[in-house]
Image 1 (tube, helix red, strand yellow):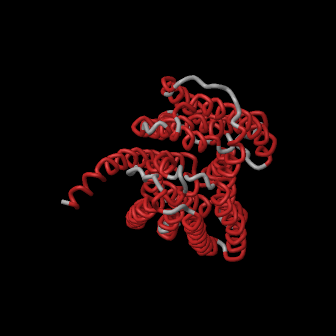
Image 2 (cartoon, one colour):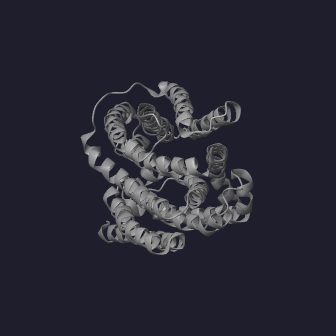
Image 3 (cartoon, one colour):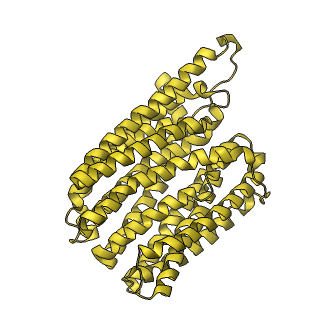
Length: 436
């Protein structure tokens, strides 16, 4: 009977995870097909440039908004009446930081990326990439967060599928129908797809309410602490690509870039669980981090199992990747198999970091990620420079394992400190809500 009750209590969460995971897996498959189409159409050399440009904009989009989207989920999950002010806060922060990032990109990137021999066309193509991959992407991702803040996971899942599906349709139409074979041409199609997707996404949240334009000053520090680790982590993850570009062939860079994309896509199976649990974790820890520790331990076990299964699937399926991306990518199978199990280490520390974030410990969360990014970046950079791609692989596992250890040390340390300073058990009235 107890087992039956346990299964019944977990059934709603399981169904929600299947829906959330299904949307992210569908999105991941669409992204994979998009990458495959672009890899075949652009060729190894131009696709390696595409990987580099995408990596740079991936860093910039984390800066756009200065972490305001996390405050939206955390605050609105606790008090729905704050949505209007958090919406206005996000719009102001995203518009201001996005304008600065695009301007800086237009000044710096033309010196490193030549998408067209004509300087003005080159500048225009880069501008379209920046507007699409930073401003419009932030808008689309914000809509997903708005739905998650209201626990409207089905709507959030639809937005995820819309984003990935829209880009896939653009790749099919542009590359397979109209014969796009250069980055400059793809910039136009990429921008148009993002405009359509962003328009549909914004229309979908109109029913949640109008924005109240203000700046939530008490969230500025938290926002910076939230986004800085993502920026530093993205920089750390791309140091190896920059050094490999300087010292190895375009095929190595392109194959490694695809393998890394496969790991990121595989991690979405863990992210599906994290995004499902985050609002509930924020509510569970209103009275302190210690009230959510049982919840976080369960989430850790679930993440570990999901990541192990995902890594095994990627390892087994790796020989099929050259059939999808093309015979030019000769190193892709071995690279994908080598990096596959970094997903497990990412899942281990993501549970601890999500717990720190949901409970409002942004400073400690930032300490873990920032120190891992700075020290890890140095380790990866040295190993890549000294030992090439083999050094990159070894250093990546060392850094991810160290990050996992530090994250859990920080979480458990904070929980123990709160337990010591907690009142007597009889005075504790806060009850942990059921998952999710």
